[in-house]
Length: 457
Image (cartoon, rainbow, N blue to C red; front, top):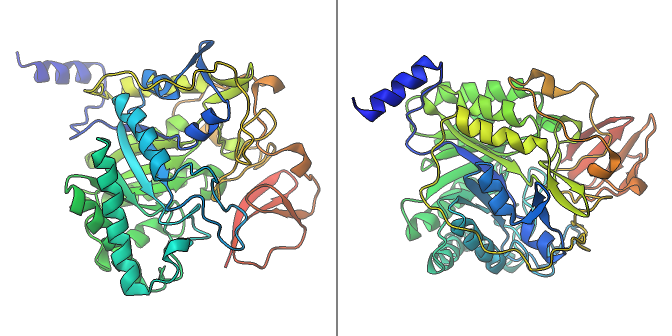
């Protein structure tokens, strides 16, 4: 009997779901902080043994890695607190190529996230790179294409061409402001297509992801983008964080509507960033009709927690990052989703030789007393309402130890001010007082134990 028929019969008997996917479902992670953490002395361990982060993730059935890329992370942007992003060039071209080599050596697929900025690009800011400031729109459009093309050529020359490229990061409001704000959809679309052209100039087979957030009508946003002429889209990526984008039911509604609206095309959907509700998020995407689910990418799983709604896959323990019980969800998902093993199998490059673990001195460094924040993600050690979204998960998630030595506070205690009035913070966690900021940007608003991100236009 044909082996495929046997496999199909076995899955039917066992009550499994058979997905005839053109490629395996993506169990992915964004681990862009890892090189900087390792350089600062942080080590990663599983079952008490220090190992390469990529080896740990691969053992737990992760098969796709997302890395962010800034134009010049050493550039100083006037008036921006989180600038320069990295004086040492982390998440710049050379650093990202080195990390991409480790990803490919581990036999994992690679998603490259172009921010088209020198620092974080998110719903609250999309800074034009400092070196591009003097360009008019025509020149800027040409620059986006040439920069994308030349960057990918360097990846290709190092045999680490990405499998997928994300053209812009959380571009719900457009990209490369002010030129590409979505108030001018024509200009926004021209910049998007310039980026896509740059990708296709190098390799027509590289998949294209467009990336927005799970709010502000993401399906309508996608329709507008397509109507404006951005049609070469393989994957529709969402950022989904419970503390900002609602309970998992909101993701379910958006994803289901996407599957319905795009039933006549080949575009798939992915959660390009999430933290917490690990099983529920993946179940929602995997179980979409017509194989519309591409996969997910958990964001910085060694560092980032989605407030009280989620948690990292690693805890700070024994002076290093050690896996906790949540990471065991991923091998089980690989089994339940019938995900094929990667065809390439080789060991990733070794981590720095020192086995001691010392938290990085960087302002973004993770330690037992603080964890860095991105410009679009921030939380506190006692943030968000107490009702847990985990209860609605189709598969409950294991919890790690509640011992204080095994958990990682999100903000340093000097930044925590608990009172009944509202307090505002910048995205580094520094208090701005009780008056709502007036300067445009993304801020944290906190009242008692409730924390939320706000956008000031």
